[in-house]
Amino acid sequence: MTQKVLVLAAHPDDETLGCGGTIARLASEGAYIKLITFTDGESARGQTTKNRNDKLASVCTKLGITDYAFSNYPDNRLDIISLLDKCKYVEQNVDFEPNLIFTHHPHCLNIDHEIIYRTTITVFRPQTKKEQTILSYTIPSSTDYNPRSNFCGNVYYDVSSTYNIKLECLKENYADELRVHPHSRSIENIENLMKVAGAEIGVSYAEKFEFIRSIK
Image (cartoon, rainbow, N blue to C red):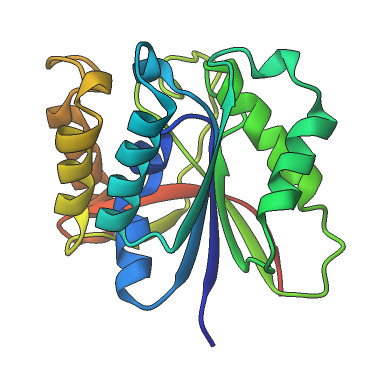
């Protein structure tokens, strides 16, 4: 059975920062993957809609994402958009039953991330008769900047064969979002986070997620 994966990301780049290596691995294994982003993203200032779409399309091609949808909700202001509208946006763009969902962690410092987590668990209430697992990912310089973040990585994906695709997307498509080492969002730190997660399970590189809910 083909795995059907849905990735929800507040901003273009969150999908790569949070689970880019895992997306690429699942794609290489034949999964159907849909990405939904919500805002224009911090790096979108001064860019046209076509430029933003072209950049996201390039990332999707590199990661192996099958389909994607993006909106132009205002960056860092998702709180002014009703929860109902955000839920409808997701529902209108998901015409399949995902059995694996990646979303933001609820305790990110960035309010958009927090809101997308809430949107996710609202849309995907535990009423489905299908198998479904929800995992949350972290974003460097967001989850780690919240002193009360209680992220507990307890689901690991070995990305030793795909971590380089994640790094390539960040350097070639999202360079404006990167910072200089020793910043949390430096390319060095992002690679080190995957190395540390890998060391925790005895592989070279890994990404880790927090288990939210699973229906079997």
